[in-house]
Length: 397
Ligand SMILES: Cc1ncc(COP(=O)(O)O)c(C=O)c1O
Image (cartoon, rainbow, N blue to C red; front, side):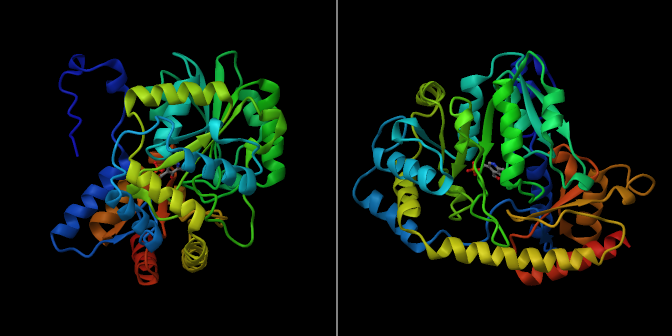
């Protein structure tokens, strides 16, 4: 990792100076250092499925290499993948789109960056329900925008209300980023909640960038509802997704989005100048994932649901903490405010103490804009869950 020393900020652009180091990566790096020293660290800090990429997807990648599918292609992504993505949006999300309104990018993160760069001008405000996914504020700043945080609490199950959005609107409000199921809270908005939020957004005429990376990891028979399927948001909704979480393909770097024709065309122009297009081999693999993988998605979903039950059951027995029972994704966002104050000044002190003294890696809530909590990822084995929770219990007792 590159050290951000900040010795002479004049050597760098204002934009670069405004971007922070990833806190999640900093804690993970410390955990890795300890592991390298022979310490058995249990990691609740991972942000990716612990499953391998499905076999047929790996083979599609190998076949692409062997067929020499290794040259430049269209900036928007290969036509067959854009067709498969449009078909997926239509059938699974009820979003009436077509391949011309789909852009393939190098990960959901690049899709989000492209969407923001396409619609946000210098000084424009972007509403972020908080706790937010860690990269949103920096992505907004890179696009020249100003992040506006809409705070929620564990008592609200960390969900914003339509009234909060309404109250935050100003003439400079340009967009809102809505993430459901949520990283870091695991909470999902119901269809009714999304429709009520969608009506406020439509009336305000602002863009909604819907981050649906975790839509396939949902529990207890819940169904994810896409805000982009609302007819009144046809010209305002950009829906972002990808293969990283659903198919255990984080390293392949394929994300995608659909949205209004002008926004997608602008995002494609930006992408064509910055990265050309994502890796051709990965696009072939993503096509195989979207069109041919069936069982593995359900196997992983079921495993995460079982682990959700295990970790939340164990954590509930620890006094002085609270968290919403997760509806999806693979995170638990635990309010630890009762432990902050005298013993630990901040969430980061608590997370560092848990790591250094009890060898359990968590992520401080301030990485997600809420310094009263810590995030636990349960993308790990049952044994690690049991041992990790025992260490947290000892640490907090
Ligand atoms: C909510 C959310 N959005 C987007 C991403 C980025 O996904 P990708 O790996 O496809 O860039 C992540 C990854 O952690 C995420 O948690």
